[in-house]
Each structure stands twice: as structure tokens, then as C-alpha cells.
Image (cartoon, rainbow, N blue to C red):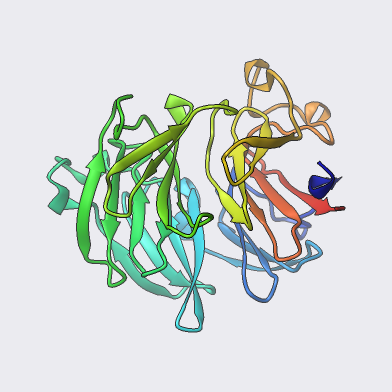
Length: 301
């Protein structure tokens, strides 16, 4: 376990006086090392330097449903992809919030009667530029588009059979074995599910999860924030290496996830919603609590 030793840093993100996070949902690091935190406040995309000092913010239109955010580099420029749950659309912007496109619900799929049934929760981008939208809070489908945001196909639907999902909350392109695959955090089914890039079911990972939310990868390892009080690291074979910040039974505590601050214990997670590794191998975790919680786990070894 010596390769996964971390030092817990509470209250890493230092907000200026008068600003406060809402529910903190997503986090990413750009090429310059800045950390972008997506949260349900008027500062819906809050940008910090590597030490946690606030730099600027934008994105008030995303505030009521701030949820999924992914960063992707394309032709030498970095872009953000958003899945704000209240708008029933997905968006692509520059790092400073200039809108590239907004994409309505996938009428072409034939599965929606109206936009309100479509409640996307996250997006994954493949090496060829195709992107995949997980309709986690809607009808539990995955929708595939090309790099020009043109519809390709859909698959899934609610259920527990192979190929079906129940709250596909997070989505990722797993490239660890050299062959890209779509990986879905099939949260309410308490499993991970793999698909080919064209939507054919491959298999499941079922051990080691309580309520898996999303992913990041570094080398052969996979990072899985789990809403019920822990962050899990899996090896190349998707075997558990370690559970970090484990807080058994936290989801059963009165008021969960909005526990009083004296119950938000250092070294114990409440509701990890997204987690990433930065370039140095440190981990940043955002938690689903009403006034936000962003924790840095500094890599020790």
C-alpha cells in the first residue's frame, strides 16, 4: 500500500469573504494547475490556484443544477463539458465560460416525450473526439455524439439486466488496457458496467462499492468516489487497492449528507461526488453537502 499514502488537508479551497459554496459536485485540473470546482452557487465554476487561493468564478446560469463537469484538451486548447441537471441540456465552453455550443435533449433517440425527461449527470470524451452523455437522473440512457456534437446512437434504459442501468451517474472512457471502453457508474445498481465504444455490453464490476459516482484514472489505477463515505482506488484488474477516508454507515446518520460541522471529521468523508488526481498524484475530492466540502489528499508516497 506504500504507493497510496496521502495526507488529509481540510478546507483546502479558500473562498473570499462574502462567497460560499453550494453543494460541491465536480472538480478538474487544467494544464496550468488551476483547480476548477463546480458547485451550486452563483460562483458555479470557482477557480483556485494550486494552493487553494480563489482566483475568479463564473457560471451563475448553471448554479441551480450544477453537476457534471469534464475538462478536455482539443487541438491545443482546453474546454469544459457540462451536464447541469436543471437545464436538460449539455454544454461545451472555454475555461473562462465562453459558450461553444449547447445541445438539446436527444430527440433522435426516440425515447423522450419531452426535454424534462432528460436529466444528464455527466459526460465522457473518447480519444477520437466522440463524447458520451449519461442521463443519470432521467431515463438511464447513454447517448453518443461525434466531435461536432452530431448524434450517433443511444443505448441502455432503466433496469438491472446487462446493458440496462439504474442511475448511470458517472461515465468515463477507460483506456488502461490500451483499448478504450465506456465505463459507467451504474450507481443505484451498485456496480460498474463496461461497454464498447459503440454501446455493446461487455461486463460488470460488482465488488467494492456502496454507491459509486464517477471516475478518474492515473496509470493503471482507477479512482472511484463513493457517495456513501469513501473514495476507492482500483488496480488494473479492478481489484480494490484501498478505501480512503472510509466512514462506515455515514449515510444512515440523521440529516445526511448535511451533517453539522462538528460531525465533519478530518480523515472521514461524508458524500464524495467526484474525485481527481492532479499531475503530482494528489487527490481532490468534492462532496455533496449543502455548503460545500473540497478536500485535498496530498500524495506522500
